[in-house]
Image (cartoon, rainbow, N blue to C red; front, side, top):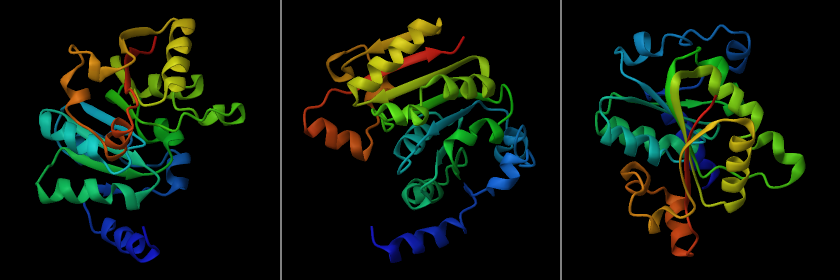
Length: 224
């Protein structure tokens, strides 16, 4: 994407009422006004809130929101020029249950309050295979503790990835730490019992992986 296109999208994002771009200072200093008030002050309903972390173009956030109007969906990514597409689509379709936040995922527990989130989706994250990148791996113990903090007691996490490494690493960590694995499969497109939300929505990158014959893995888990 050219720099002109990026600038145009950044400017357009500023006019979208479903895009929020909080300042890092107000998040870190615990002064972000929507923390704890997402239902009351943003969505203006009591419906469950579902996050997509590292939402990219926002296909999953918008796709799930179409299927589940009874829930609210928020996509989070630092790259606003990417999720511009999802935000624009949601506005064009008058979807009031969709929002996007431009921020770092590691700040997630400073943006949402305890027990404020019902579900988290992690779709095709960078597996961060190199050891020195472990701290950025989105299912590492530090991130899991952040998710646990904002999830309701019965809240669930979905991990959908093309990375066998990420799938295996996460399963091992969950089993070793006593977390609950609700569902797991190493190739959802050969498993006819895979949940419809998993096989019914495909991201831009997922379609590319499938064309190359890469299996797509999926885990649902609860953090104990």
